[in-house]
Amino acid sequence: MAKIEKGTWVEIERVVLQPAERAQNLPEDTKKTPYLMRLSGFLTADAEIGDEVTVKSLIGRKHQGMLKVVNPSYNHSFGPTMAELLDIGIDEEEA
Amino acid sequence: MSARDNSYSAVMARSNEIMKASVGMDYDDYISSPIAFDYERMMRDTGYSHEEIVKIQAETKVGNTPLFELKRLTDAVRKISEPGKGARILLKDEAANASGSFKARRAALSVFEAAKKGFKGVVAATSGNYGAAVASQANQRGLKCIVIQEVYDSRGVGQPEIIEKGRKCEAYGAEVIKLTVGPELFYIHLLTLEQTGFFNASLYTPFGIRGVETLGSEIVEQVRARYGQDPDAVIITQAGGGNLTGTARGILAAGATDTRIVACSVDLSGLHMASDTDFNKKSFTTGHTGFGVPFATWPDRADVPRNAARSLRYMDEYQLVTQGEVFYVTELLTKLEGIERGPAGNTSLTAAVAMARQMDRDQIVVVQETEYTGAGKHHNSQLSFARENGIKVYVGDPAENVPGKTIVLPERLDQVRGKAQDMESLRHSYLRNAAKRLPVEAWTDEDIAFLAADIKSTPDWVRANLPQEE
Image (cartoon, rainbow over all chains, first blue to last red; front, side, top):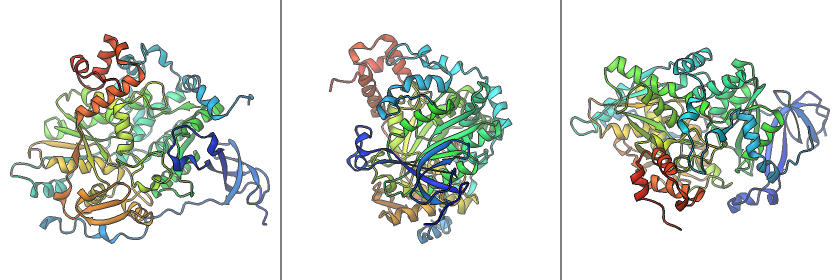
């Protein structure tokens, strides 16, 4: 596996609470899942994907977790065009 | 770091002491019983005058936003109204605030207070626009910022709108803690406050709410200056209740005592807010009934001991709209008025369209916020995401809308109807919740007076409507 260098912007994931440790009164579907946290930061030492690592966040705090993503990015978009929206407001005058 | 017990139960048990240290105020000073507390004194003790708040907000690019008359939308509503009906619709363009929403008003005073008290940073627990607002204000005051968000379901999928809100916080340089679905967000919030010693920029402190008062007073001043009258109704999107509480207080402070204060939420009844599978079946992440109703009928479920946002205290009406109606009106705003704004901010615009139709032509209805728009935070993103997640999206009669199953875009403007909630049943629900806090037989005259004020009613009404033992 490729080595990821110290200082690289990465995302980690950590199990905050196992299903058994979670709050009471959760719906059944949620109760079955672990409570997870993800956070982005700069890697504090060389590592590989899947390693337990420490990252330094944008404000300088250190967090531990499993190295999950290198160079985490935002890819959200406007989505595929919804044709249903296109003619709204076009014929409003005649409505 | 000390070797404190950081297990879920241990941290939750330290909640009160963590809160006291992180908000910089002692709620015990105001609390006189499990129910009653001195709300007005708590709000006064923030120590800021209206003029000071205006000045503090102006320093950080907040407030004095434009008030637009929506002429073509008003015309369109008049065409489908009875003769003489069709109130003038005005829109307060809160997207013009730094960070793109009214939440900047709420963040401005909190962050100013944090800086004044010497805190090095601020923490906000929110998946809404408030995170970006706090981050933006923190930058301007030289403080660090941590935002704690509920982002993903257990598959690691997040709604485009929440992803965008996370991006914006990170763009401002905040540390963003991204969590899966669950109320344990509060545990992470407490732990973060304890570990950092940062200020709790809760949405629900008196600072957060007093910051919104300027929005209400600006509306009254702008409407008076331009039309020579007070607004007849101001429509306010309701989630945690702070938007309504702060705006209404500002409207009253400006002397507009006859203006109807109207709450509005997107109807998501039937979806469970803590459900992993329901999480991505809703297209609105806030401004919906999943927050709006519980917070109206019991405000003290927030992340502070006593909530400064007490919406039922000021509310005259509560309108519900469907997701499809809001998306339709969002598109209409773009096409008829030539401005693109985010859907969540248009929730109250949707109710305004329905209400304006019933109101007289010479009346004025004000939509009190807009929010920024962009990738993710756009009705096309949200509708396409809904379709990908198995929601049936089609054009038809919005009455067929079923939260979590269908989103029905109206065919015509006259199908945007909204639906009024029964205020009496909200008040009954509030009293039942109060009875869970303290049994009815233990309620003192002071408790009853507090409850009456908190639901905009009278002590006699409360006495005549005491909840029955369950």
